[in-house]
Image 1: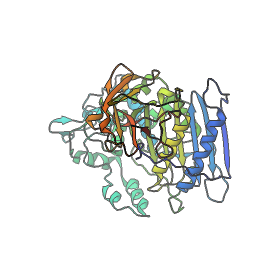
Image 2: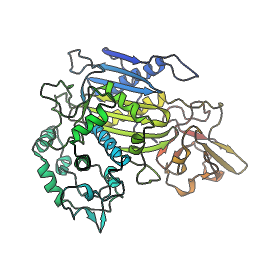
Image 3: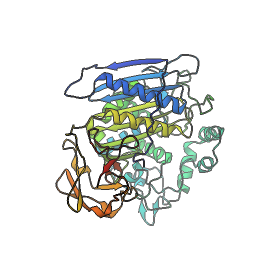
Image 4: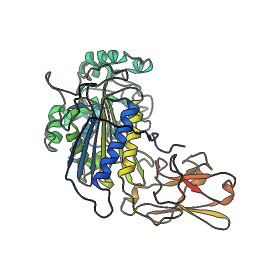
Length: 487
């Protein structure tokens, strides 16, 4: 049973071309990972990702406790030996959405936008269609991908249903010809198919509309807002929205090693047009790990979900044994990247590959999960049985959330295992909160089989699967390192 979104890989391969840089090199302190151990994890996971994804180039950036590590592997163009560097410009695609989210959060912090407001308050023109049974789309629904829009803008649903090796040409043709005039014309025809705020539906149209709203409230172009409020303030000196014709952007390829074109956008570019370097992306990660009030607003659980949430345009946010973790994937025609932030641990990771096909995102996810597992330091516990104790007729399960993390984010803790088909929603296995950080549950021994291995994990908010401590004596060897109950 796999209790993460991605299956971890354990393949090793040597990669001959490598470029490395490390900022703020430090020695091991207080039992934390050494720089050499972090680099070794980067090398190991880059090797596995390169082999599995068939990417020519892999770039990894890690921010941990204020230190930045970057490494680059392979080559941009096969056979040319042109290894990426910290200053190589990549398409980051939907990572752009996080920048748009920060600008929207800034507007909220500054009082220019209220998350509870009907979005039509900020849109030019009349849109009586943008409501469902009298319920309008609110700003917080817009930034959470829960508008209730029946389709995306532009509407590429048919193209997505019938993908093939040349589909990128049709997508690019659509984007090349789609103007702001077409966008507003289609917005007036949009129908909502559900109550806003209830159903997640990923949508580039939500970002286009947000950029329009931002321009209306600030009376500046979206590009100017980016430059003034994010690029300049964070010293993202190599990050751009609209590249000039002579700008050198790293080549990207599809799964057949065919050179792919860059993305097109004749709208605002707010959904996926930023180009950036790994050096700048690690600066961005550092900012996302800060306690800046704009960052805090952009990461907030705006719809008060008891499980996962989206903040301002994150793919999803969950809570596990290391606290909040924020996920974002960006995919262009020839490159893909993934970003993972653990702000409570002051850790963030960015991984970029210059290949893009239907399997790439899963391979990226597996690599970033493995990297995170390696570098998230844990509080060392005494070696022994972890997570439960036996009485004469029951198993007493106990989960203790790290006291250095915010306990208010833990809405529930459940058990999931072989005894309930790994179902964290099972009401029989919801733990009881004993204090801010401790949860317990007593389960009769009769619920567990005596003639086969019983395995389990703790699950926070029914979505955040907790990694077992490495020194637990009752941990599964290999597999998903589940905890084992011995009756």
